[in-house]
Length: 173
Image 1 (cartoon, rainbow, N blue to C red):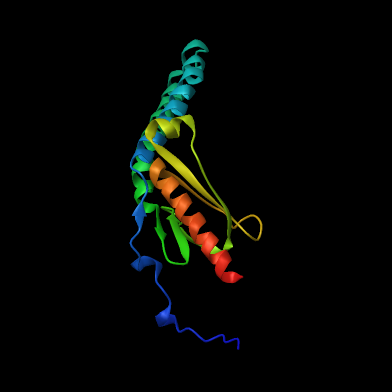
Image 2: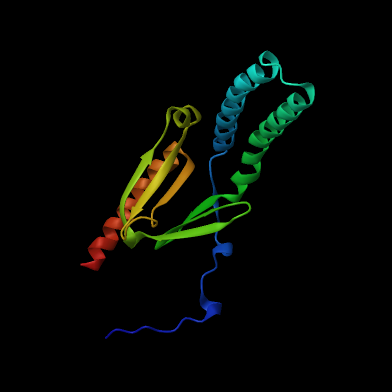
């Protein structure tokens, strides 16, 4: 017979009490390198505008001050944001947290997962990291993407989750 018992708030599992696994520290270096390449690339047209086109001194100082602030932010932000991200594998689901200002925790039950894949860009491979992406039943918005995992960890998680998904399908039938 079907039962739907009430669960009190005190008995709910707390996401704060889990042992969050950090992302690979190489993600910080990769994000800094990518940001640095973009900011340095932006310096070329800025140099042309300010030096060749003859922008007056005060606007030129404002332009380069903005560029230096952007450069600083690009180098500092990954060190602030990376510690705020992490994941946990539990018996029935996977949790992922992210966000410095706007924080979120996403839980994806294994029985909702339909497909799991790992991917990596050439830069990712250079730094030994990969992205794990979970595709869930129920359309868009339910998918989970965890970038910045060590490549071997991403593959181990992919295999583990596929086994869990296979078991949940067997137990449902």
